[in-house]
Image 1: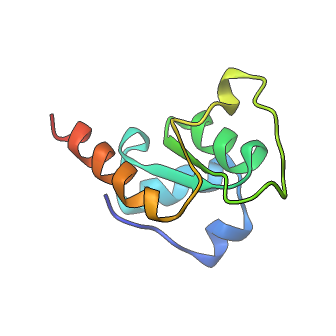
Image 2: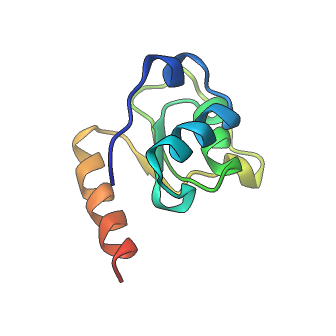
Length: 96
């Protein structure tokens, strides 16, 4: 996995922008991970283009109910230190 962090991508959270970023990096959506703390933008946007998604529930600032299938993250974490374990698990699953 290669991290991608761009000002443009962070400001424009549309699925189209994510797809363009993946295309520019020559990464398939099903080999990418979207990590975010907002269901409506981060998780739904990643799910719509076929990315794995990780919901970072670091506080209750944005309490959101997951109602629809596209709102369901692949993983949920509460602490940043959990991210490494989840990414390791994803990495292993990609190479099986």
